[in-house]
Image (tube, rainbow over all chains, first blue to last red; front, side, top):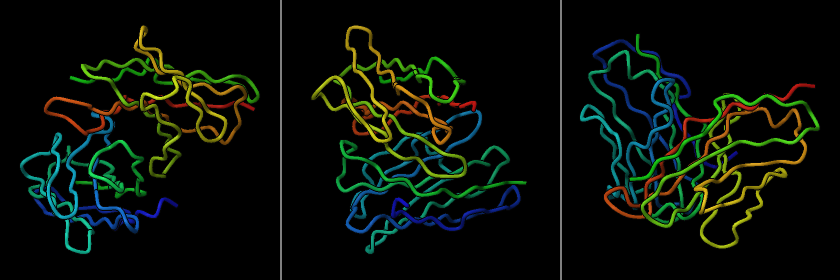
Length: 114
Length: 116
């Protein structure tokens, strides 16, 4: 158990809908990272927040957004969902704002868009 | 730009035999390199990391990797495979400069199968 929690574990929804994925980092970690894992794209970095502020952006679509709250939990919002958004979404956390240190991954949220 | 190539999408070994998972990287800057493991229906776990200290890095569960700058490789090895090693393994490079500074780039993954 990494100490990172993600809810929900599974999410099934329809095209055009909007969903919110939630992540709670390990106690003491200030950085939260979001990743998408799909069969065709592999594992891709989406976005990073550090202590409430956006720190780095990867291959995140404009339909997706994220935020980190004062209690350091983070939410990833996916809107106007398409079939291709079906994937496993991971959250990870680390102590610092750079990736020199280990990132601890949550168990993931599996999103299925029908 | 940084990139990672895992040379085998699948590796199959017998229990008790050595494991070799190959990884080549490309980086414009001095890289930090990692190996992560993902067991079925689980999140990723760090096996080991190289951050410009010793070139031979020892990780958890008997795994180790050697950083070879001349070959731009960071292959993962284990002397003797166990059934519990069955998983997908990801080679990862830390972007150490440029517009992607501080971001991880993942390889496509290698699925390790261990036969009894």
